[in-house]
Length: 255
Image 1: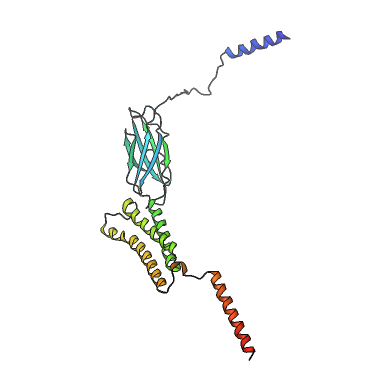
Image 2 (image 1 turned 60 degrees about the vertical axis):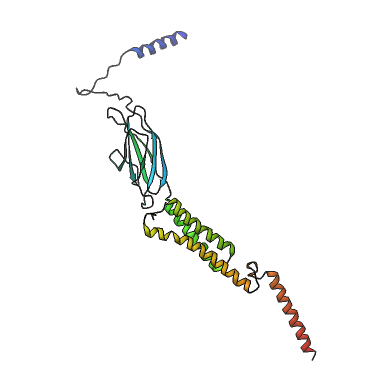
């Protein structure tokens, strides 16, 4: 039995070393091309929010790369090195995009970078990343809406906590506007400098309104903590009136 296995093994080894001839149907030449490593794609593409009008971009050069090109497109990734608009081309590892406007666009910007070798050869894969940032102008607008809500609530219910909350919110809006300068309204314009006073005016309006209400309440002999009657006091007044009515009714029935 072992002899049969030995014969089968020799036959299999013989088939492996015997060359196999392949013939083409036509006489056309067949060319086989092998491509080796060209240049590595950039790595670590990082986008940093600076303002609604500026993004910081950094990356690491690909292996054997001399230059890097970066392009951006709104709504989708750049398909190739000619798609979208040019952000950067050179041999550095960081740049800024000052042509962007996150507050004035409805589509997300997508960035893509490719590497170039010193002899001009490009790699075709690249690296990409979306600028998924919320505009600080939208955050500012949300804070303004919150401030308006608290402002109206403080005037409607004359509550101390609501008044202080509204005043602090509007003061925060004013200081953010001045110190941050991150809205679509730039402080370089004279009329914008006038508008900056509005949050502070609204904050002091709420506080003055609260002060006026307190003065009126104190003039009536009541403090701000006594603007309303507690349920116990209402119940006591009701019982007092009930017993007075009952006594008066008995007195008249005895006549």
